Image (cartoon, rainbow, N blue to C red; front, top):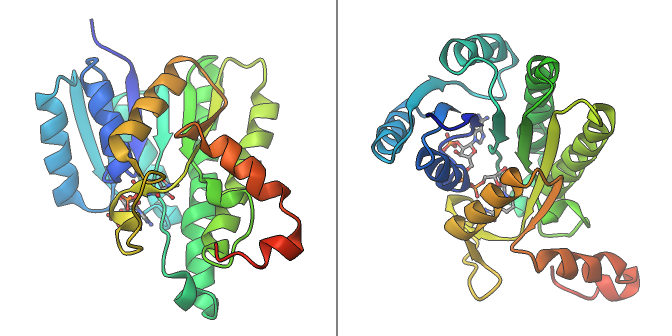
Length: 248
Ligand SMILES: NC(=O)c1ccc[n+]([C@@H]2O[C@H](COP(=O)([O-])OP(=O)(O)OC[C@H]3O[C@@H](n4cnc5c(N)ncnc54)[C@H](OP(=O)(O)O)[C@@H]3O)[C@@H](O)[C@H]2O)c1
């Protein structure tokens, strides 16, 4: 018997690859989308060896609205309407450079908010009539309070979390679930340039294990690792005069 059908958007993301490995081991039928087709093929071959019942790939740039139709047609041919859709693409960018660059602000907001919102809308049109399934989306704890070091990216993620919250409200009782995944800093190519370290930096493997569990339990909100829920509660409640004295 094969596992669930899973569509992964942003399949070359380090976190998404770890999640896909977990579903491959359960014999899932996988549909993978990313823009780097060579990397996509390498990941697909690896997932097949790890036990996926089938793996199909499609190369696309999510910022290209015209690519959406052909992408979803390819999805239909490979897994039909998936039981699980994971939306994992995103870009952090260099906040210092972005902050004063009008075009760069537009690009970051597009990739982290407009493009996923557009994709999720199209996915839900197909998934809602099935009366089951789950759309899981990577947002970020960065969306919980605007900070000097990443507020352009953070504001896009905040918008995306609000979008998911409203969608969950709309879909309540439909059988289709919406999961908002809010990781803290994770050791992936996205954060490598920042030179982060220490106990607050999680591995992609750990975050993927949390994501798999939240999907299985049909949760609607996941902080990963778990302690970010409490760290962000503290950060959100700090009065501005104190907050402004911190380098965050
Ligand atoms: N790492 C963290 O600390 C962290 C924390 C909180 C949330 N997140 C979120 O988790 C998700 C996964 O990130 P990650 O840490 O796994 O980083 P990653 O390994 O750098 O993956 C990001 C992925 O997004 C893809 N991407 C970006 N723009 C795209 C576009 N226009 N079209 C197609 N693909 C595009 C990249 O593809 P290319 O390789 O082709 O550029 C890459 O595969 C992101 O949404 C991120 O915002 C990450």
